[in-house]
Image (cartoon, rainbow, N blue to C red):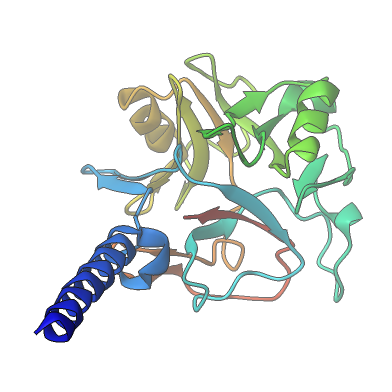
Length: 261
């Protein structure tokens, strides 16, 4: 009788332990690939598609575009300009300072139309990995910005250089496109403390795209490399479905912002 009671109690205790472990496993999203969180909010209005990347880790992929099979990649799109159409990759062929994989590369610099490089361009910087439970900030920085770049390097962050589109709530004076040009456009944008990748849903005139950004409250925006072939990009929705935003046109792009979970 005593042995039977002991065996019964042992079985009950064992079942309780197994159940507790099961509950802990099921509540731990890191162990459940099909329950991964989706930190990138995607919204649309009549004119724009808006990807909120504020709460996402980022990197700058250089030389090789990430594949759509990489399930941790939520958005991948061209970032900085490529200087020349080369048959091989060089960091020196990417516009301006950039950080990829936590390593700083100088890139090339150019002045156009008599406008100094440091006035025409700015940096988008993510300072790096989660520190003390908080994700380090994303910023749009004017030159010089050595201290910000070094902080991003120290924490495994990323950065790329691009042309101003909107600065302090005003359309940047030296425009990168003719105002009447009809095309798809894409920018990395800041509104308050939040950051977005914003693109027009359908082709429209550049001046209309700029106004659409202002209408949704964008305070600062940098251009992202676009045009046929350069605009090849994709995003993954919260159901895991990959959406190709533009077809691949050629092999000349050199760098891509990668939004991850």
